[in-house]
Amino acid sequence: MTIIKHNPAAYHSLFNEFFNNFPSTWGRDTEATWSVVPVNIYESENGFQLELNAPGRNKEDFKINIEKGLLTVSFEKKEEAANKELKTIRKEFSYTNFKRSFSVDENINTEAIEAVYENGVLKLFLPKKEEVKISPKEITVK
Image (cartoon, one colour):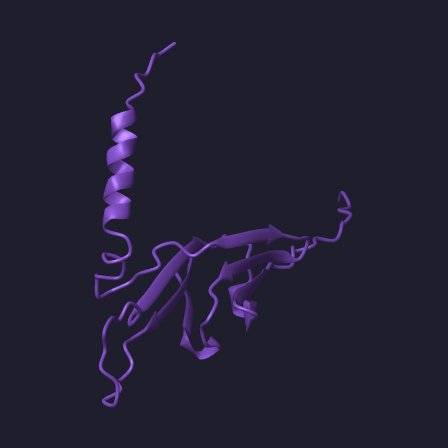
């Protein structure tokens, strides 16, 4: 058993650091990146379904490709033109992107992958290949 010392001062400095700068330091960086997009993966008899949580996007902005057994889903939105009538006081969202990759088994029919974006969720269906069914054959002895 390992004994860990409790240091309340560490929590105090953590909270002070967070709240002393709140909210003035939020959004200072000019580039915001979603490094991890939440995903749900389901399997059925016919294939796999991936659901990526990506609200507030347009379906045309997604890039989905498959190469060498790797399925990659990405999104990129660049800064829009500035409004010259308004003086910008603070700009926290101007650029977002994400990229998620998944290994794809050789049992997946990559030619039939489908994608649908609705209600902020990108759904991909990866169908399984039909198994080759070998019919029984009787061999006669000569």
